[in-house]
Image 1 (cartoon, one colour):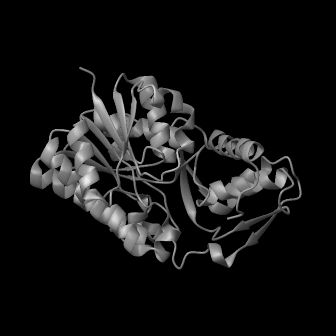
Image 2 (image 1 turned 90 degrees about the horizontal axis):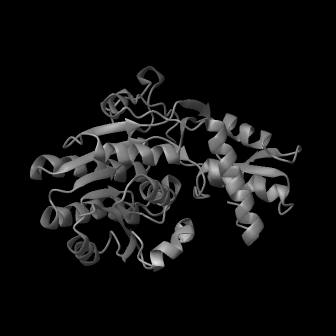
Length: 336
């Protein structure tokens, strides 16, 4: 019998790329949770397979609704679970902290409780975030798994809850649950609320003569370690298939360390326009920022053999081309 996996957040950037990876590299049935109002643009290239029930099955459920989650788990009884769904925008979490906590903390509790009741032997990946580490002093870099949590946003607080709930269920109920703190990962289909994606979108709009040649930015001083989303989903697959250990937690991230400013300058260097300027928009600044994000991924790499393979240059080129194609097809966007 074929294995079945469940992906929460299947319509997001990471979820959609994970589907692509699993279709190519496994024969699993792929089940995905999406909300009734979720946009399906990121999986639009899979519509034919979805409509014909060819390995991909969508289930309408919401992490904030216990009954829908419980019914979905009971119906599917998945062998593998990738819990990716979240309110995942740090800046938005300052405006909507309660929604963020309910979705990310209580939603994770609802999901794991249903799995405990209906498929306790599933192999489960709970996706937390590198944001849990917050403002890390330079002398603590690179950040290993035991680094103290110091959240810099309601989103980061919620992901600490996600992380700890996953580890609690592993210990209390003997469930095979691993949590990950993935550092910055990006590429095609990245939401435009994230810095590199809004920069790429604005550059594409400038190239199409839709807006003035000015890229609006927030804080450019933060240091990030960049990974490609396609490397990230390969890591998630390896996490659940290579000797999964109950209750373990891992930092995962790329190898290319670069400030937001230098990342933007690289994107601008790819542009067909030569006169692009940069301007700080106070509305894009967070009240506080996690400004040093450099991971130590030794633990995960030693356990699975995973290493990032896709270059920073290819990731950013593919992201910019993604936005060029979107704007060519669908026209103008909010300059956010």
